[in-house]
Length: 343
Image (tube, rainbow, N blue to C red):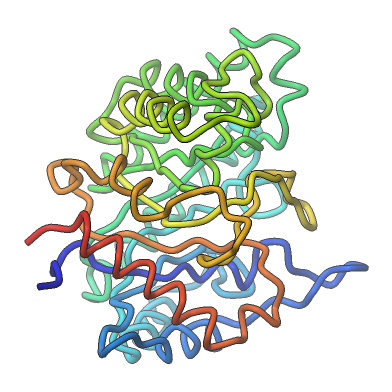
């Protein structure tokens, strides 16, 4: 019998991340179309339960009034979807700016968190959102500037995150810091753990684990000193190393992305190179998705996780527009829930 929990969500931001109108970029895919594609997916009668949502243009104007936001909630709920985790627009060029920047930049970062909390409140009161977190990162692309003074820059990120966590707690929300090799101070499992422990507010700030990104943590991309395995590893070497990493970060994990990675990095538009998301059935995929998910989902319900989400950032539009893509993804999500879900 299939497990009823966690709920299965699809992310809307693959229609936006890496897209644009610059040379070599593909155009964004509208929220309406992403919802249609998600709603059309079905595997043996099972469909997606909801969506996770990026709070920025062109999907959402973060300055939208309550009535406009309620209309968006109506649109999402009209497909039978719940709204889960929200992505705060913390990056330069959106609302926010670097969490390790100057006072003005850090102020913009906190403004983005406040904006996300306001939108979350509208969605919560509407009834379309009943669970989920607000996702953030350091909004400092790359690690070069961070390396100029590692201790001071990490301390600055910790201070900003602590203020952000206080804002979230005041709004009844939790923040999840995304572990991804392109974000300064979050670019290795050890540096990410240092930030989480430095903030020290697990009730308000936790970790968001993505299979594609955290796979590269084990290899020490951007932080060779923290590598747990080397290229050419065997399964007998990899899974104990993977368990070592997940044992450190799992207690902090409050949001989880199912994904695949082929061991390479990729970037598009303004997005710095990070773990490449691959199709769920990519023959070059390095991860046993179901097995890897089990390491993160152990005791997940006790950490307040109620849903899991697929993330396939920077897929070509042709792939995103294919119904087969989403059915394959949904099938993988179902297998994860069947193996590691709960009642």
